[in-house]
Amino acid sequence: MILKYLRGVATLKLDSAKCIGCGLCLNVCPHAVFKLESRKAAITDADLCMECGACALNCPTAAISVKKGVGCAQAVRMGFLKGTEPDCGCGDDSSCC
Amino acid sequence: MLPGRKSAQPAPPERISSEYTATDRLAAWKARWGIARMSYRVKPGLYALGSPSASSPVFAGANYTLSFNALRTNLKGLSAWLLVLDTKGINVWCAAGKGTFGTMELTRSIRQTGLEQLVSHKTIILPQLGAPGVSAHQVKAYTGFSVSYGPVRAKDLQEFLRLGGKATPEMRKVRFNFTDRIILAPVQLVYYAKYLLPAALLLYLAGLKNDAALTVGALLAGSVIVPALLPWLPGRSFAVKGAAAGLAAVAALSPLLPFGPYQLAARALVYAAAASFIGLDFTGASTYTSLSGVKKEMRLATPAQALAFLAGLVLLGARRFL
Image (tube, rainbow over all chains, first blue to last red; front, side):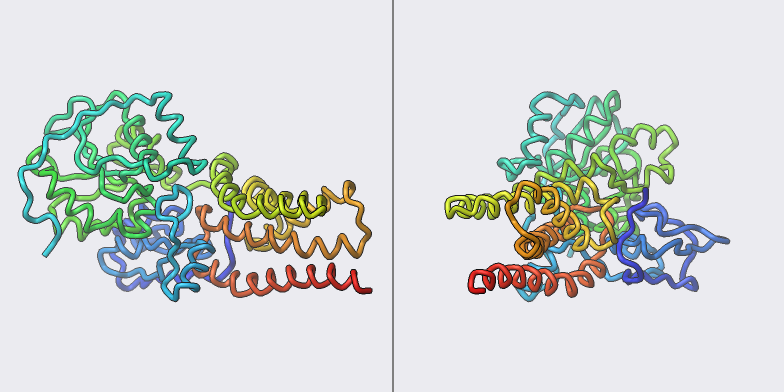
């Protein structure tokens, strides 16, 4: 069963003109958001994107952009209270980022 | 200036084994229940597993004990170099998100350990989940080492090597099945029990034993039912799933409660709001929620939770004066 989060919210963008078809985004994406189509990367389903940022950081031609962040309510709350970017204080925790 | 450029003569790598012992099992259990979590750190640096030679593969990992144990025990029978980065005792994925498992730390570590002098090749295998913090082309530019992203799970490492350093699509996917979810439940449970168990005790001592039971019910709904039944709870929003679990808990307890419809409805508002709040926090443990999504649902859910909670309390209070 594939668990999907909210529709149409992910900030993932792919600029096909810049893509050289190296396929590294397919390797680093943990949710199979990308596929190769006629030697270019293409997005399968942006709703699967969790905005981890691995694809954008590893794209050698900067063809991918995404607003990277942690999908964690505690982090968003902490960030809101401290007036910073979402970041939770549970740094030594194994299950929460 | 990059970190670690000038390095002293590195210490010889420490030898380690790939055995998984009873002590390791106990450490994993304690970490999940939050007992002395800060002590689950491995010293960063280079380790020798078996009897590695200049041509042996190099694996990078985090210095969180559970991550380190997953790596070394899944390489049983192999000789390899393990490069342990200083991630402040945080697992690979979370550390990569924060950037502590990152390009700079990997670069520093490669330089400081003198890895270049120990191996004759220029490839370093990283866990795929380290990718949010590491830029492969930058590491190559800084150190000359090529990053090869291995599988998500360390248990697929031997198969990955057998396939000549290739991961199957299945190895590349993060899962979130029942077992994955339920082992994370204690973290949420312990975190909210710190507040809600004393609250339940106070309610009990104040003679409100039904509300004490409902408080525990909301705690379990948000922290155990949400992870356990995640795919089957309605909606995609975790706040909605949490509220549904909370309502189910109130409904399940209702035959034991001496309340009429009015009293029960007011309490359903209070405890569903509490369970929704706890359930929403499970987004942090989940493997598929995005920041944009969490922000969107919080904008709606936080006021709704507060409103439902207060409305329930007002209804309960108003009844006393009617």
